[in-house]
Length: 465
Image 1 (spheres, rainbow, N blue to C red):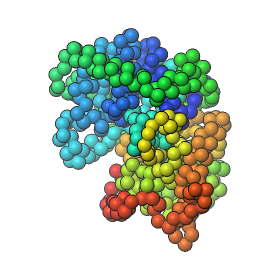
Image 2: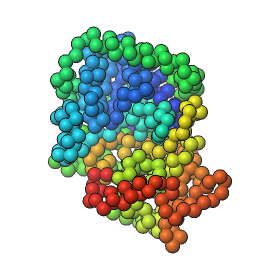
Image 3: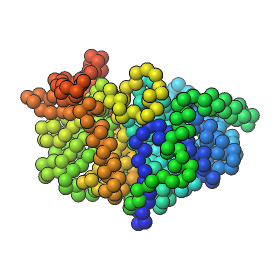
Image 4: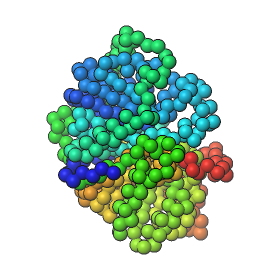
């Protein structure tokens, strides 16, 4: 853990469009450095728009470092290596798989002990002056630019001393033995003139996008103007950065000093009145569920928001979660499950996208006694605790807590979620067409999904969830 004695500034990025605006605008105004660390960086529309912004920054002399986990990079070695030909761009891959072709899927199964351990951190740092940290990866579904599925997510825009800590964490991963330069990893041969072709393709795509209604709205966005004029209304407060050391990726490392979860627990233990938790993948395990039950019995009101079966994008996690929810509800813990129809949570840009889109929770945050706020990349599940590396910021601020609690209250409104109760059996309560509705089984989930969860719940793989 690193601790900032001086106050830092924080601004919530709850709106998906604002989350894209912040990243793009920050890349546009960068003067010296861009340090980018992500679990997933898709090569979709928003990924290419941001790639164009990064390439343009590099062209004007900004030193760009990109550190990305290898889990989602199948077939991407060539394009990444081409981008790395730029004299101001460095790209490293974290915990790379040995196989760079379709055999990588087989490696994930055969060598799961190593290949299944991933870097889940998400940071975007500009000039060591301002940073974004939170739940979003780089991809259309995180910025409301996908028709079928868009995530409900949360990031924290930060400035001040805490940014030095975030940069230090980035450097620790960048210089670790698990971060491999793309040049030494890939055997694919590239030449510098291929970079010119990439630049041309990205420029053409950007020029077309600039003329769309979506991008006109982004250019006129209030946050865009605030970032460019450097007049963001930050909340100033003391904060601490927590992150797993990269050594956690080594299964032989059992030292708790490399895990941040033990450092978070004292904050949770001191909760006296209320604990609000949003975790899209919630598998507390026996020890975790007992801890929540004990805190509830001691007088702390615990409220947890996660995905319903109809909303989750990973049904295997739901199979792990459902084992604990009935016991927790009986203990008095309030469980909410997000509905896929929670459309009001989408950003204003959703009005510009045609077609039906389903919502899915991806935000990971906690509010403790309306004072402390924790926002980061970690879920409450065995994978975040034991397998993935994670990062997050704990902020001591009543105002930020009030704003974050407001997001929780909006997300858990009856029209946006199901509240679980025990009425002889587990019951889902919600509001539909302004009327209270009760479901006696997983609501609005297909038979195929229910069957899939049933089958997965029979398998002994909770430690991998």
